[in-house]
Image 1 (tube, helix red, strand yellow):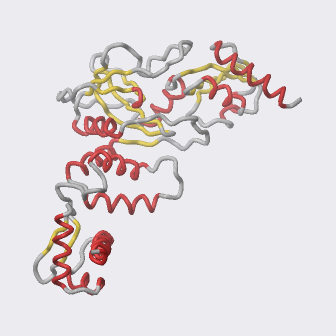
Image 2 (cartoon, one colour):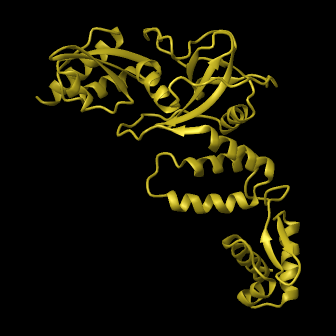
Image 3 (cartoon, one colour):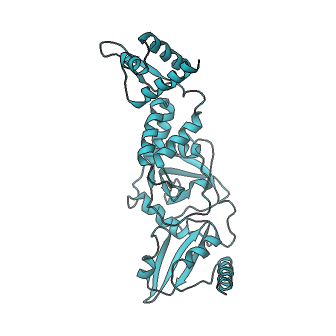
Length: 335
């Protein structure tokens, strides 16, 4: 039994290593007869592996897209989540080739319905530029939510959801007119694009009633029932979804926001920040304002201290208090 199981695993590895294998070559590689190969292929099929047989002079065996995934490996949701992760490869450098090989093997056995979901996410997503900063905690986004949004983008289907930031700070400044507002009512939009940046996912969508374009953080979205209503696409202003999202995130896309007066020219501030995490406004020759944000006041307090420039903060009050606390702590640390 152990010998048979090992041979089945070796056979499966060979079938996944290239598109097609003649039965005689498989038999030679495994040191068994052609009859044994046929029996082993039947065993793998019984286990749910979609192996196709091509008959004729150039006959061969190959992995196909079957009706179900191999048992004891991945269920439908896990398969979609893994495939999305392999396509995106967020946050890990140097794994591009390995991820591509793993994705190829996975997609060889993905049923058509699941492969279609994964492809929809891939085609609907844009990625923002890399950022040298780090987040204290990554937001949790359900892969099923991403798949549903991507399918709505693909099928031009109106999307309905509730939108609210969890544990939103009371002293957060009001949002501007471009970033999606919060409310206690369901949102109905035309979905156009998903943008991934710094482990956050954003949806670019157009309001059905106002025709205005907004950015929505996906981890703040609670999907409602499918609308099954189609829409006709409208031209996107500017044509660059990623820049649109990054601009909104920099000015009003975080859980908390701040306007910080920096005692330095605007060009000096711009040279020290990633343009995606803040907007710099020139006030005078040697003074500028940095509009930025984060998922907590603590993050903003630490971030602004890393600019290496003198600055002044008057609001929100919570940020002033965090900076005062940090300043006292650093003074104590320096004796």
